[in-house]
Image 1 (spheres, rainbow, N blue to C red):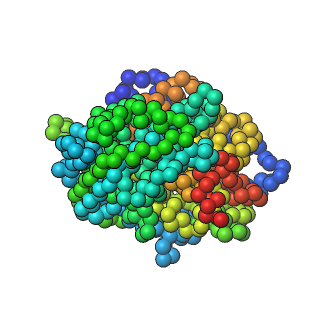
Image 2: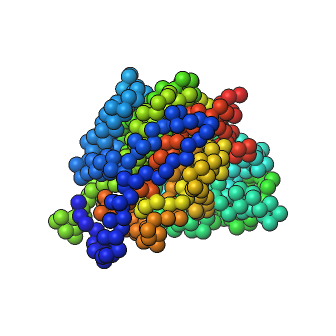
Image 3: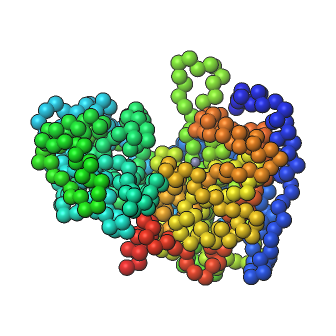
Length: 564
Ligand SMILES: [Zn+2]
C-alpha cells in the first residue's frame, strides 16, 4: 500500500479529524425506543460497532486479496471470508446444494476489430470511427441483417401513454433509436420524470425493449448532449473485453447491439432519402409513428467468447413466515490489479483495494447481519444477506440473482443495497436512492424522524444513479429497492472538512488503486447508518403490509405481471 501524497498537505486538520474519530467510535447514539414494538423485538443495534467494521475492512481491502476481481484467487478469498462470517453468525446456507454459493456464469467476450456495419448503398461504416458493436448472442460468429426502422426514443411506457413501436412488427428488422428520455413539454412537466432521468432513457433499456419487440438488432444514435458524455467514452466502454451473463434460454436476444455517431446516423437517414433531424423532431411528441427506412443494414460480429463462473454468497436468517423475505445486498468484487505500464515506477501500486468500494459496504453489512441474528426474537419474514459478484462489470451477480431469485420475485418485501459507506463522520441525512419510488420510503422516513435524521433526496436525479448498483436488477423484476448513497449534511466537529475529505475520495481515489483505508476515517456516521439500515430491514421484515412500488412507477409492472 502507498500513502496518498495529498494527505500530507492537510496537516493539522487531519490530526484533529483522527482524534475526533477515535473519540466518537465508542459512543453510540442514544436510541429512541418504540412503544409499539418494544426493545426486545428490535435487532441488537449495539452489536454494530466501528472497530468491528474496521476489522472486517482491514482484511477485505488487504493487498493479499489482489483487488477482489471476480473469478480470481483474491475474489474467491473474499467470497470464502464472507460465507464464513455468515456461518459464524448462524445464517443458514441459501445457495446451491446446501452451500452459501450461487454460481454465477459470466461470459467474457471481445469483438474483432475488423467489424463493419453496412447500411443501404454506400461505404460500410467503420469500427470505432463510426460504430461500436457487440452482440446479445454469445456465439463466435453472429450475422444480423434486416430493414432499418427509426423508432424515436424506442420507449413503451403505458403509464405515460407512450409507444414508439406502435403498429410496427420488428421481427427480422433493426431498430434505429435515440438515447435519453423524450423532453417534458411545458403543459406536461412531469412527463418522463421532467429533468430526472428515467430508466426509459438509459441505453440498457433501449436494447432490452428492442429485444422484447423481437427485433434482430438495435442501433443507438450517440450525441454528446443526449448521452452526457463524448463518443470516446462509447468507444472505450464498448470495445475490448465485455462481460455478460448467459442469455436465459428462450428469452429474446439482439444479434446486433450497436452505437453509431451522430454523423453516421445522418448518413444512414440520407441513404434512405430522409433527413435525421426532421425524423428526430417528429418523434418528440406522443403518438409519433415508427418510420421504416426501406433500406437494409447488415453486419457480422466475430468475437472471442469465454465462459467463467464466480459465486454470489448468500445466507438466510429464517423468519416465522419463510415464504416472504427481506434482502440485503453488497458487492464483494472490485477491479482487481492493473497491468504494469511503461513508465510505472518499480513500486507502483497496481492493486485496486476497493476499501471504500465496497469492502466498507461488506463490513457494514456483516455488522447488520450480526445485529439481526442477535435479536431476541425471530423476524416474521426471513432475512437474506446476499454478497454479489461482478457488480463492477455490469451488475452481473445481481442480474443473475434477479433471474434466479431463490424465492419468487413477488415474495421479496424489499431490498436494501449497501455500496460504499460514509467514512467522513456523522450526518443528519441518510440518502436512500429509490426512497420516493415505493412504500419503503415512508418506512424509512418514519424511522429517520424517530432518530432526528432525514431521508435525503437523490442529490443528482439527472445522473440516473438509481440505475447503477446492485439493487437495480432487483427493482427491474419488481422488488421494492433502496440503495445507500452519500450524505450531504455532515454534523460532526468540522462539517466542512468532512465534506472536503469526502469529495477528495470521489476525485482522487474512486476506482483508483488509492481507494485504501485512510488514517482520518471516522466510522461514527457509518455506524449510525448501519444501525439505521438494520432497524429498517427489521421493520420491513415485520410490517404486516407487503411493501410495494407506487402506482405508475415503472418498476411496479413486472411484479404485477408475474402475479397475474
Ligand atoms: Zn461499488
